[in-house]
Length: 169
View 1 (cartoon, helix red, strand yellow):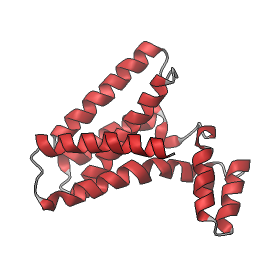
View 2 (cartoon, rainbow, N blue to C red):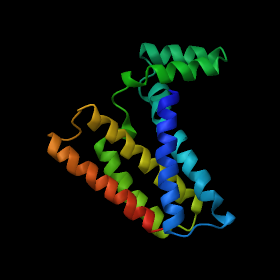
View 3 (cartoon, rainbow, N blue to C red):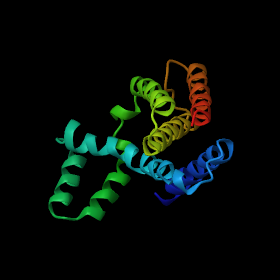
View 4 (cartoon, one colour):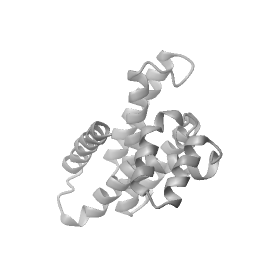
């Protein structure tokens, strides 16, 4: 768990450092961008797991164990169990290709038209976490699309879009 958090933080820090220098975001007034970035990096990806446990598949054994721990106010243990069993949840709605395509459009819309720095940081950071999710799948030789070549092209498009969206700040 700690290794994954450190990896995500390193990528986040590098990306937001890039955003800071390229867009000259040196003033303290840009703090909502970074707070939104932290929320988008840690809260949004885990929201998918919470929806899976509470809404989409509460009848599964792991979901019932997590719900039981929460009812007994054992929050830390429930989070630990949710993290330990995260690979069991394969049908996460926010990690599907369709959602990623829709979220790419939403990210462009928020970054290009919203004046809210928190929202911009949130969507850019969550988009970064989706890119990292796909990178992990590619490194594990999992095919996201029909074949590995299309998967690599899709990933390259995502990385390019991430940097273009960062330039729109």
